[in-house]
Amino acid sequence: MADHEKKDQSKEFSRRSFLKMLGGTAAGVAFGGAIPQLFNLGGGLVAIPASEGYLLVDTMKCAGCSSCMLACSLVHEGKENVSLSRIQITQNPFKRFPYDISLYQCRQCTSPACIEACPTGALAADKNNGNVRTVDERKCIGCMQCVEACPQTPSRVIWNFEDHYSMKCDLCVDTPHWEEKGGPNGKRACESICPVNAIKFVAEIPTQYGNVGYDVNLRGPVWEKLGF
Amino acid sequence: MLKRSTSTIGILAVFALGAYLAWEASQLYLYRAVFAGSYKYNLLFTNYGWLIPIAVFLGIFVGAASIRKPAEIAGDKVLRHDETAFLIHWGHAVSCVVLLVTGVMLGFLFVPRLVGTPQMAGFMLNLHFVGVLVFMFSVSMHITDVYVGGKFKEHMPEAHDLEDAIAHYAAKLGLATPKKEGKFLASERLSYPMWIVSVGLVILTGVIKVSAHYWNLPGELMKVTTFLHDVAAILVLLNLMAHITMSTIVPWSWPLIKSMLFGWIPLDYVKHHHALWYEEITGEILTEPEPVVKKKKGRSKETVVES
Image 1: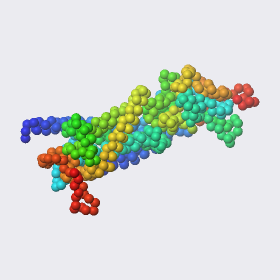
Image 2 (image 1 turned 180 degrees about the vertical axis):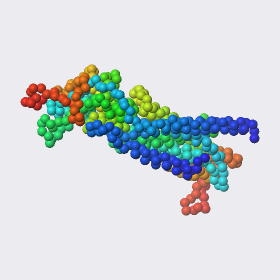
Image 3 (image 1 turned 30 degrees about the vertical axis):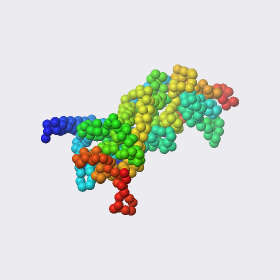
Image 4 (image 1 turned 135 degrees about the vertical axis):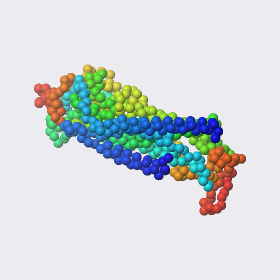
């Protein structure tokens, strides 16, 4: 066998042996290192700072005009589409005033299940904007876990069916189609536009009543006579 | 070296087991019993991401441990694709299809929205994860095989390949005289860098996307990464479509499908379609490209010779 052939063979052998050893060892080490993961049942405590802002809605005062839904969709998405609104109103024709209207808004939960469920950190407490629970759609992978994780019915996390990402009330922190400054220290589109003042922003954590909502009474003395 | 049957069972078993686990993991369960309850499912990318480096290292190990067989001639047949080629090719093929189908179902707007529930989104993402494992195994095995065997140049295009590829297909249409081709056609060599770019980009962006499950990466980076991942996926899809078209629709490629499955290709086919490779493995020098011999239907003994 010629010398150069022997040299080539030994070179190939050393390359092959090295990669074989590297691949086998690294796979073994990686598997060994991952064994504890197999027994990791999760369930650790997650400390998420409380939001510095909350929306209160008075369903008895709400007239069901849907202006808040249109405004929400417009300032966030640039189009008036009630399906793209992060606040939702439903009207029940079988119930009588003032129990016929329901208003569903994100409660900015103190222990948000949606944030815990998000696998990529797309849904997180925005530290730069008063810890409001917001979705960074650039990070959203469309797994819909947050939509399902929200303990409220209907879910306060809305699925953007057009662009395929989750979205929720951010107290108007990220409103590219609105000239006003939003967020806990600015204005909220729904609150600003509501003609009967049925929506109110507060900075303190409101008293929560189970699954019913916050204890809210925004009605004035004339409400019983006029209905708004 | 793994046998074809072992590789086939292995690939199918991984996908069958993976699909079962993907489906099981995507079922909702109550994880916080507050008010109406919070439900979630398990995302394999988050829970089993560590399997990805293991798949890569296993690919390197198997690639380095596989001794390639030379082009052996037995009677009127030549061994074109050995067991290693079988595993690498079909590993790539099946995983590529799974990744593209699940990726397209999750991502594109022009496809009817088939993924409408969290469970289905979870199932698709989890199936995508299973595809990633097999794909990363196959890619790392191929890279190791090419590196160990010093075969990179063999796959890369040469200076005159573009003209040769045009001449090759012109000859097939009867517009030019056929040229002698090696083991790989000029057009195959031309497509190799396109595979490197598209697969390289899809893997690079994929690694960043998987990393986002473990580290808090900037939103702007994720936006660009997701866009590039989509673009790379389209490039891979186009490459795959061209590859499947040239290997299944074009009749002169049909014997290669057989050899990709069973390994052997007729020596006569090599003589007519890969003259340079024929000369290399037989030592016989062909003076000019052999005319294409076509069997006529219904007359098995008679042949019609085309120039």
